[in-house]
Image (cartoon, rainbow, N blue to C red; front, side, top):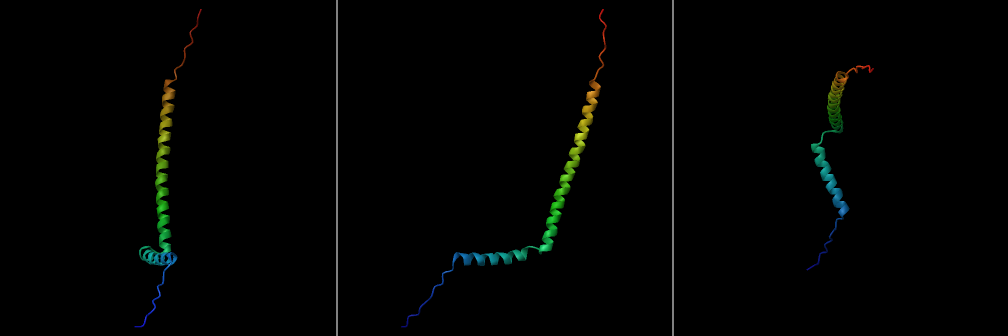
Amino acid sequence: MAKEKEELKVESLEEEVEQMKKEVGKLLEFFLPPKEVRREIMKNIYTIEFSILNIFKTLLDYKVKELERRLEERGEGKKERVKKIQVE
């Protein structure tokens, strides 16, 4: 019987991590759209957020003006003229 030498190759953790990165990268390429499409999607998401914030700002400005108008009306209505009484 001849003894055959088997060489065991121990993979380092770094090699395993690199291999996993490659596999995950291939999966992501399959599921993710091209870079140009991703940019367009992100631009639309930011545009949506901006539009929603503008809507809230407009509503808040309207409510503030309405409250200021009410305060002015109440302030003017409560102003009573003082009558001067002459004391002899």
